[in-house]
Image (cartoon, rainbow, N blue to C red):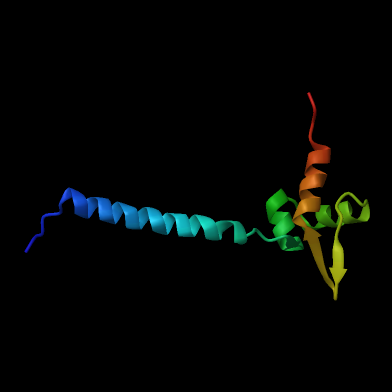
Amino acid sequence: MSQILTYEDFKDFEAKVLKEFEEIKKALPSISPKKWLRSSDIKELLGISHGKLQTMRNNKEIPFTLIGGTIFYSLEDVNKMLDSKKQRK
């Protein structure tokens, strides 16, 4: 059997959906993107080879942190490096 929805039913449904959206919206600021990336992430992000990334590290173009043989890059540092390389008109 089908059920006929009234305007009031629709308004109740709308209020519930909006309330759920607000709850999700409040939770989003606590979800932050990764702050530290590995070499594979950086190579994919910048579209560069392993050799190019090594050269950038050697030339101190890109800051990194070495922990137990794993190289990490701060997303903030990578963004600063990209901003410094931006071509100005």
